[in-house]
Image (cartoon, rainbow, N blue to C red; front, side):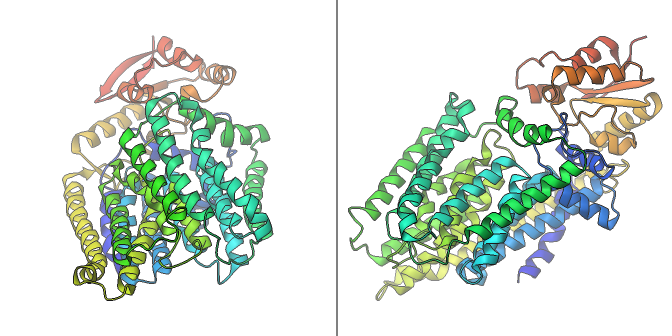
Length: 593
C-alpha cells in the first residue's frame, strides 16, 4: 500500500519540484557549497554559516558515488527521492505505532502534503532533517524488541541532526533524554526524571532568550513551555511502566560515534577547530539577530495551553481515580487526533500548533495505570519541543515542526477508537464515530492529494522550460525565464568573474563560472569579520572584467527594513561599480571607467 501511494505521489512531487524557481535561491547556496566540498574545499570556514558537515558528507558521498554533478536538475531529483522516502518512513512509523494500515497510509499522505514545502527550497537540509526525524520515530518503535540496536540508532540519528543543524539536534536530544530517564532504575528515576522534565519545560525560554523581548517570541516560548509542562506532568506523575534497560552506553556510542566521525572527516578535509565551533554553535546562537520571520501566535493560544496544563494536573492529581465515561474520553481522543492530523493540511497556517497542548494525551494509553512507553514519551516530547524549529524563522520550518505531530495525532486517534470500542455497550453514535473516524481522515487526505495534484499540474503546465544550463527541466513563468537567460548572456559577454549581491548562487551553475569570492550565504555581508572581508576585497581589486549581479528587491527582503551595515565588500561594490543593464529585479554592474 505504501508503494502504491509513492507511485501516485511521485508525478505530483516531480511537477511541484520542477514547477518554479525562488529568487532568494537557498537552493543555489546548497548546490555551490556542495560543489565546493566535492572539489576538495574545507567544509567549515569563516565564510559559511548555519549548517554542519553531515549534509555534505552524506549527500556529497552519494553524488560522488554515482558520478552526479550538483545542478538544479540533479539536486531536485535528489530532493524528490528524499521527499518520498520521508513520507514512506513516516507512514511506516505511524503504522508500527498504531498497527492500523489505513492510519499508516493517512500518516504517509499527510507527511507527503506537508513536505511539499521542499519544492520551494530544493536541496536544503530540510529534506534530510525530515527523513531523520521520521526515522527517529520509526527506530523508537523497535525499543522493546531490540533495545541495544535501537539505542545505537537513536543516538546516531540525534548525532546526525546535531551535525546538520545544531538546534534541531538539541531538540531531538532533549526528547531522547526525557524518554531515557524513564528507563532508569527506580532509585535513579525518582530524581533524574523530574529534573529532566524541569529542564525541558524551561528550555523554550533559554533557547529563545536572545529575542524574548519581542512579543511573538515570548508568547511562543510560553506556549511551548506550557505544552511541555503538560507532557512532563503526564509522564512524571504516574509510576512509569516497566521498560527495557536504558542502554545508556549504547546510546552514547551511537551519538558520540557519529559526531566524532563527522567532525573527523571535516577536520581531515581542512576545517579548523575554531571554524567548527563558530559554524556549529556561535553562528547558530547569533542567527536570530540576523533574520527573523515571526509566527502569528497570539495570547489565546497561551490561554489554551494553560487550560491543557490544568486538565493534565487534574487528570493525574485530584481526579486520578475518578471514573470518566469511556465513550466521552474516547471521543475526546478521536477529536484531538483528527485535529492534529487534519490541521496540518492547512499549512502554512499556524493553527496546527494548537494541537501541541494535547500531546500529553498520547503518553498514557486507554485503561493503562502506568505512563506510556519509551516511544510514546519520545514522540510527545519531540513534537512539543521540536516545534521551536519555527524560531526565529517560521517559513519552511513550520512543516518540520508539524512532522512529528503526524504519528502523534495518529496514536491519539487510534487510542480513541480503541477506547470507544472497548467501552461496555457503546451507544450507536459512539460506534459510528469509531467506525467512521479513520475512513473520514483517509478520505480527506486523499481528496487533498487529488486537489494538490490538479493544482500542481496547472502551475507546471503554465510554466516554460528555463533554458538555463543545469536547469533544463525547471519550468518557470516565461518572463522570469527570459530575464534570467538574458542575465546569463550578459554575464558571459561582459564578465570573467562576478559577485552576487545578495548571494544568488544558482547563477554560478548556469554560467559555469566559479564564484569570485568564498562568500556563499545570502546575507554574506553579515557572515565574515571585517578583516577577512578586507582580504577578499584586496584579492578582487585586480580582477579583470569583474562584475556584480545585484538584486535590490532581495536585499530589502533580507534587510527587513534595516540599512545594510557597512562592510568592506559592500563599500567596494558601491564605490567601484555602475549599472550596465537591468533584467527585471536583477542589475548587472560593471566597473566604473
